[in-house]
Length: 380
Image (cartoon, rainbow, N blue to C red; front, side, top):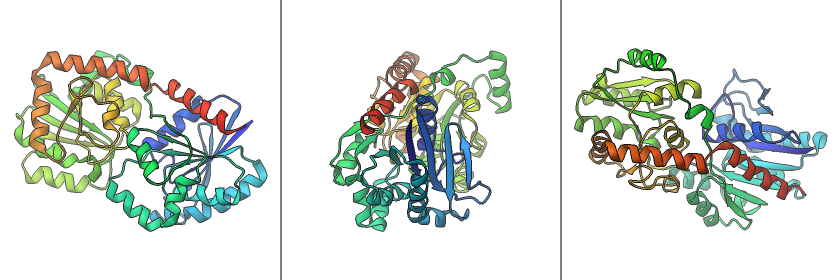
């Protein structure tokens, strides 16, 4: 039995790309793998211990938000040492060079014979990452330098690891997409009912974004782009986050509030339906580790628009699998949206190429095989 202890700053039901990746991979790995996970509790309503899929989750802290994150390195490493005495882990796996990664580092320093895998999923801006590095001091670089193996979801993050002095092998293992879910054909009546629910008329066109409402995803640029677009083009946002109030106020300020729909985060099963009734997926990111939401939209059959930042160029080839827009330029974004709604030939070419790329490179079973080979190499 290969026993893996995972360190992550957060985990389900708090969901981001990293959390989804961990669950998708662990659910698919063979029965000879066993997983525990240590993370910060963050919210009081979350249990100190529970099971998600094949992972037993241990949460440390008191449900005090950021305080729990800051204490995770010490509390998490202490709990890990106790669990290791009982279970004798074959390897540890840190998700991102953050508070969970620091807990893994503290454990590794006292248990040097245990292989240590670091997975980089960071989507933060360089400024945010540098501020974290300053806060963690010398330990931040050591998260990379003491790793036995690193996986990165993009070339951008591989370079990031090298800049901080990584000496171990680094392999690109991107996040994936559940093709059975996102490429499924849905019932026409069900889709029509959803169009009526969001009041999408026959002449309306829907620009969609899925994901967190944060500065790095630049949803303000999507709202500002509506000023340059016809009245029948509307914007649908699926997700929650700290910028919701500010974004709603912006829509009112520029007079497009009736063309903007904010819905809270929905399940992936429901998300597929909204993607299927939309016309273009847009995220004019300021930074991006890779961008799961792009891949899901591509699998669902939508043309995508993104910026040439972070890991996005790994899958977005301009005018082949999507369109690039300029960073922080709502007018340019509006022009790219217009192009995809007018040029049907280009639109269909992007959709087909995007679906082919996702099927060939970003399917979860293929990603899991890569991770299984890495674990088998680490655990001798």
